Amino acid sequence: MSLDKATVASIATLARLRVPDDRLEPMVDELNNILGWIEQLSEVDTDTVAPLASVTGHSLPLREDVVTDGGYPDRVTANAPESVHGFYAVPKVVE
Amino acid sequence: MAGPYRIQGETGEWEVVLGLEVHAQVTSHAKLFSGSSTTFGAEPNTQVSLVDAAMPGMLPVINRECVEQAVRTGLALRAKINLRSVFDRKNYFYADLPQGYQISQYKDPIVGEGEIVLDLPGGETKTVGIERLHLEQDAGKSLHDQHPTKSYIDLNRSGVALMEIVSKPDLRSPEEAAFYVKKLRSILRYIGTCDGNMQEGSMRADINVSVRKPGDPLGTRCEIKNMNSVRFIQQAIEYEARRQIEIIEGGGSIDQETRLFDSSRGETRSMRSKEDAHDYRYFPDPDLLPLELDPSRVAALQAGLPELPDAKKARFMAGFSLSSYDAAILVEERATADWYEVLARGRDAKLAANWMITELFGALNKPGINLADSPVSADALGGLIDLIADGTISGRQAKDVFAEMFETGKDAAAIVEEKGLKQVSDSGAIEALIDEVLADNPDKLAEYKAGKDKLFGFFVGQTMKKSQGKANPGMVNEMLKAKLSG
Picture (spheres, rainbow over the protein chains, first blue to last red):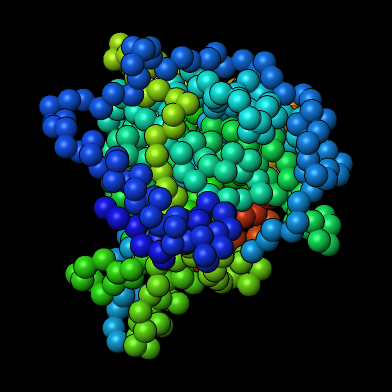
């Protein structure tokens, strides 16, 4: 698998990263290099091996359905660039 | 029912193919991955934990009850429960999604294929396939109309558990889509996994619409997002199907896209900004291990399910001799079915169903009162039906008594007593009334005897009037007939 310039530009857009044009070509090389390393893994035969989600052997911990959190709107919006009447206020985003 | 639903285009008839994705808010106290409250209508950002606000370093911990609610729902949809499921990140940017991704399930959902049986008019049924059900987080809420240049964001809903229930493309008309939503809502409310409140957004549907000539392969579909009313769902499908037919018949082709329904104009329009947003780059959420279910726990949840609408309907039809139509109405809500069972116990079940559906629902619907707030209880309506059954009052009188009961909340016997409404079934008394009527109207009697048959109704009317409506109408009829032919 290898990426071209257009694909890298589109990935950058999806990730909301502004990549100047002169940085795109080097980034194509860097990403393809990483993909090359990862592709080496496919040389290992894993046909009979179940996917491994965790090496600890733990299972997903579950929480009881009890309200234990919240009730601190000031802390929630403390770092907001702007907040009004308890809301976050952001530049208008509307269809 | 009439033939299949078809839309007449210029080149012939078209078939509509529909699939629904319903987002149902899971009934729980706390959110899917945090301990903050799910209550509707709180002050902005008061039900938000640092997990819901996606502060750095916060870890999601799944709510056991939300998992079990999803399993219950899967079981009620006769679906395959996947004992191992996986949570993935669905990546997109929006102001009300603080994480920059939604935790959802993609390749390995908690529930697989199932089915829903729809009750169609005329007593017909149709089985619709369920493709899957998965758990995911809801996003926050954006308010766009509070400020000229700002959107206000409230994260109270952020992280609330949703079940996304995906149907197979088995629906073929706006009406079937409406019945599907109603039946799904009914099942969810029976088992208590979602309150089904569409106004508050607890249930929302995305509708996939495509058209084809009957027998052709599936056409390209468009998705109408975020519908929260059964009526709008039907309108949107009708509009969208016609739009697609016009494009195809005009020589164009359908672009697969997401559309919004504008209820004020009754039309759908493209959400252009979402065009490149479909690359969600799903990957397994590294904060969450796969969810493993214990088969014995699943069996216990199955055993704990209440009687479901289909089973209740079958029992009502067999046990109470109700029609499929009446039974479907009575079982739609569990509370309605319970009310009916109290009413029907030890009484004529068919008569009880008629009184409940026609008179009670009629009276409740006019002012928009819920059955739970009915001024006439099941026992009170039962008392009225008993008075009809033992001949104390006629069916006609019962309607007046019922109106009075509904108005005042008094019980039937008290009203009958108070107004002296007791039906006269004493043949001697009725005969005396008839004799009076005949004596008062010698000319009409002569005309009748001369062959003017339709005067029979006149004599019935006069006799009923003389009795102040209290005479048993059946007996008046029979006795008059006997007298006049004699």
